[in-house]
Length: 281
Image 1 (cartoon, rainbow, N blue to C red):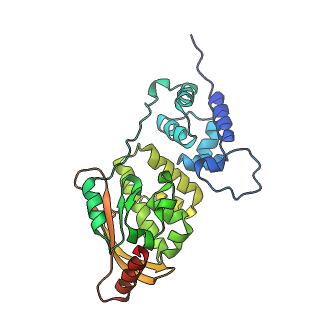
Image 2 (cartoon, rainbow, N blue to C red):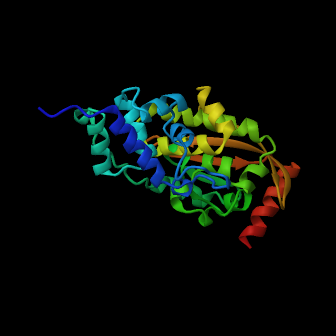
Image 3 (cartoon, one colour):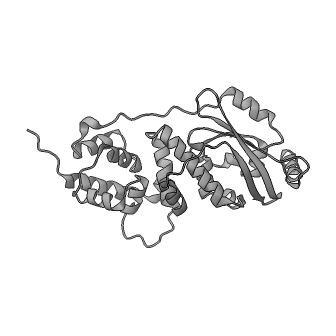
């Protein structure tokens, strides 16, 4: 009869794995020059896995048995490959519960969305996919926000830019209001697909990087990303007050078209028109 794995073996594996990962491997800032440990801290792993530091510490010390859901979040947080995941579940004595790796299909923009985007020449417009990934944009949106093409496709996410891109963050005159609404909308997506590994990775990354995101995510506030008024301060066009409307695709793909417009005759309308014309030229 094979002896049951000791909890301390699981703890040793977790400790060794986090020592192998550098903050930059997970998109985390490396601003702390006084790190006393190699790799990630316990606190960082706990935040990435959305569990308490005390619970994770007891896991490493072999004082608690990990649940299946915690093992799944740890596997994602520590970037474990198939063999490492299998080993993790065996050490935890839960090899039968190991889920199969789910590969998320690539998000492809619907042709109708592309046609709509191409026809919106005077209004900033962005096509958002799952997790608020930015799938496409028009020239006016790049002029208003930032040149999205300079951001690697895997990092091209609206809420990530809202929290981590200095240019995008600074242009929101009511950043806290807009950021909290974005977190609440992301919460709605998490409820619809709680096992999405890319969503878990995004939440873990932002929880470590930003205290406001961590606090607002824990509030479980929800809303639907549909419409509202946005107040921007653009580095070239000045202050802008724009109406933001979001239309969802009827095919269940989760794709949405976000369009920003200004009331005709207002200073914002004139500034937006000049900005888009200048950019197009």
